[in-house]
Length: 64
Image (cartoon, rainbow, N blue to C red; front, side, top):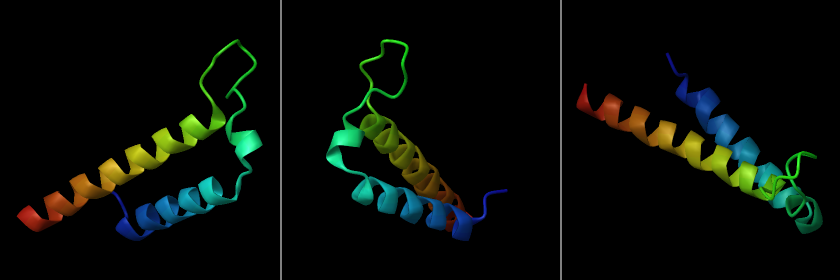
């Protein structure tokens, strides 16, 4: 079961991280394996996924 308080806290934490990481770091590759995918893109993906979970959970609560 998903704890909505923890989920909301995780989203807020990721938003804080996104805001406070310098652009130079966000633009770095996420690994040293030749990927073009950046740290910033990873952060955006995590936030998007967490927000999708949050919306799904809210819909489930609303329907019950």
